[in-house]
Image 1: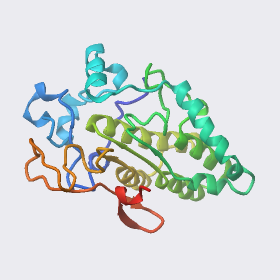
Image 2: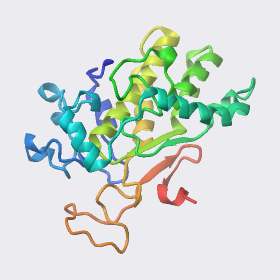
Image 3: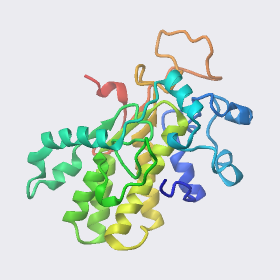
Image 4: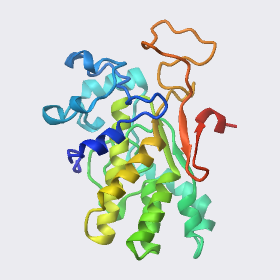
Amino acid sequence: MPDYDLVLSPDVLAILLRDHTTGKNIFWATHDYEALGSEYDYHAEILPHLITGEHSKVIQPRVLKSKENQTDRSKDMAEVFTPSWICNAQNNLIDENLSPVREVGLWQDYVRTTCLEITCGEAPYLVSRYDATTGEAIPIAKRIGLLDRKLRVVSENTETQDDWLKWAEIAYQNTYGYEWQGDNLLLARKALLFTFIDYYKAKFGGNPSQDSIHGISEIISWNLWQMDGLRGTPPDYPSPGELHENPIPDMFTIYCIIRDWEKNEEVRFIDLLP
């Protein structure tokens, strides 16, 4: 496995745990951790002290979970991750349709192309730091995610740090994903952040500034969000007119919001659907 135990600063972790729809943190949305105590209950928020320090190994990628736990999650949530080679084949088909915008002089349009991974899990279609089914680390030159491809194009077509950061930010602003389970969502958000650091280091030989890390983390916290894809609400929140037998305390009807970065405004995800 790659360096998934990298220590995030408290302020960056706080950003990656944020849920912009509810104004709280993302919540567990899984029963897998309830044996650890009430703070790990299904509807409890994921708080920094629950996953740092002596608890830093609580959330693990699927490949490091027990076989029993993997099977239970497959049964309960239809959680089955896709091997990297299949992600690559499907992403190649997307790239074939986008080939005209990758011609000389049009690489900026390729970077601006909007992509969304639905029910993203650990986001293997967006970034591929490791194979989600084997845990094998993937060298940066062989990564196949849609965001990986955008960042590769950015690195090939920019020279200065300012230009690279500008276009990397645009790449992130146009890359989206949603997921039900909070642990998966946090892993996906981390993967996108560490991918940013990986490509910056490959291009310039050092780490990006904390300001750059904070800025990308903010984009990630908006663009990868926690949602029930059938309702357009946070998991277990009812849609208008629905009754709910086991409501979250103080729960109310609420649709998930994301950010349109070009217009600099918040939008409801359901309003973007045809």
